[in-house]
Image (cartoon, rainbow, N blue to C red):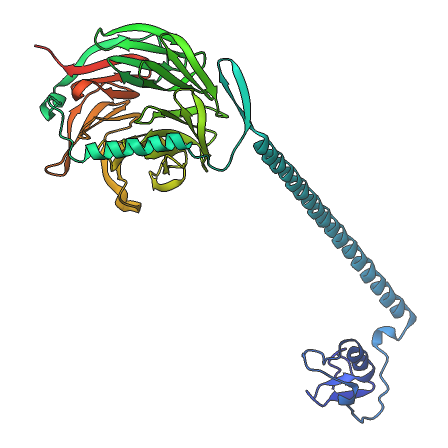
Length: 478
């Protein structure tokens, strides 16, 4: 009969009436006083639950090792050695624990410092964002306006103009026939390079065509004017900043720059300059009514300007950097391509988001079709052009995916039949045949280009390469 706690024969044995376990009385009473439970179980146990066991008094024999003085000294020495070893192990474990604690405290302190630094940088960024100003200069004057996060819609007069243009364009489109003398499939297939002119521009980025003149912008801070009829370089316009986009407005060339500026030049003289973007401008677009100019930039901003004064009239900020833009041919919608791969559609009058379409890659360029319900876009790293249908949503909005190779520039002709693409592998023309509701490719050339535009009656294509070489494609005269 052994005690369940000490493992020795108890001097005053007691038994638990709950489990029948034998204990030494003095040990179990101390255990109950501290824990109020029976050892080895979670059952409550009181002193009253212990029953004494009557046994004969036993005189324990002295252990053999304690029968003589030398043996007792040996036992004491063994106990001392055991205590010394235990003390050493305890100190060793304490040292390891202290090292672990020091490491944990250091890591905690480092984490707190990083959090504090990031919080400070976040607060500074928020403060800087709230104080960020963009300057606008016109005729040498500069004004600063605090960044507006909420959208600014068009003034009433320009909003009314947008409605008028939309009504006029929609009315004329429904029954608009193909203009007389417009290029046929055979005409497009017969296009070939008839001119090849190396312009002074370096690293060409943009191409705009109007009334037989091409404006080619480059990163050298110039816009070169090229006469398509004469097949010759006419003059260079000094912009002073790397040019990222170019458009014609009448006889005026408007350029956007990597410094955030939008500049207008007419007759070789700068007629206006404005800097509203806090970063590079990546796209320009002209409203069909030719009273509104739009620009987008890496600062995530969309800005509309009054073309008469070149002053900002509306602005909105998006959630991602913007890479390209275009107005709907009716003028009531505005599309902006983003670095995140979304194409966002806005109401022109209010700049409120109306819809978005997923391209799946940072948008390089986009262009609307004159049919009013299609637009085409391509992205970085893609070897195809996706045609979207504005009337649908989600995957159903992808009307067609055209395998063209990598593309940097797109241009749809006036009738919406022909979509020209420009890329490092050459210029192609994709044709939609309405009668059969199918796509064909009447033209593919090996002329590399970064941008392309249609000439008169779609019987001519003008393209420019990254090196500034302008190519004119047209039927070869006999």
